[in-house]
Length: 206
Image (tube, rainbow, N blue to C red; front, side, top):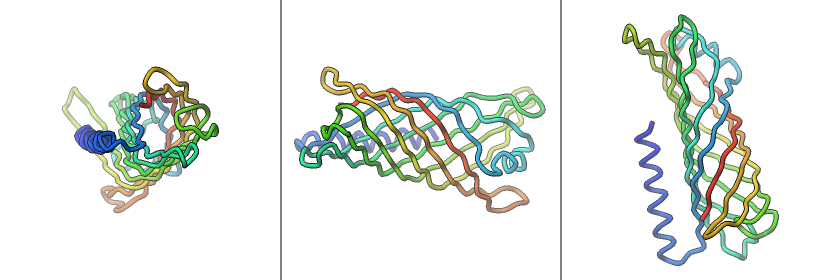
C-alpha cells in the first residue's frame, strides 16, 4: 500500500509542479490527521470469516496530498485530485493476535469556499474515488499471518476553515468517508466490505 501511495503522490506532485511552471491558478496541499475507522453493515462478521478472528476497528494516522485548479472567476471553487492513505495502529482481537486495517483512495475532488476566495475562510469538500484496503491478522510468536484485500469506491465529505499564513493557508478539517470494496473471501466468494472513517485533519495549502 505504501508503494502505491508514494507513486500516486509523486504523480500529483509532478502535475502540480508543471502547472506552477505554466503560471496556472493551481493550489497544492499536504495534510496529516487521525481518524476512527468504522465497520459498516456485516463487515465485522465477514472479516471474522476471512481472518479467522474478530476485532474492533482502531485509530488510524492519515496522510493526504491534493491539488486544485481554482481560477479567480470561479469565485472560491476548485476542482482537482486528492490521495489519502490511512495507516492503522494494531488492535488486539480474538486469540490475543494483532489485527490491522489499512486503506487508501485516489479521488476526483471539489472544494468550495463560502468567502468566494480560494484558501480563505469556511469551506466544504467532496470527493469520489477508487482505492484498496488491506487487513491482516498477525501472531509474531508463531509467525502466522492472514491477509485480506478488497478494492472499490470511496465517497468523502469534509468541512473546514482556512486561515492565511505566509505563502499559503493552514486549515483544520473534519471529514467523513464511506467505502464499499469487493474482496474474495475463502469459502464465501466475492463479498462487499463496507467501512467508514470520521477524521480530523490539519492541512497546509500553498
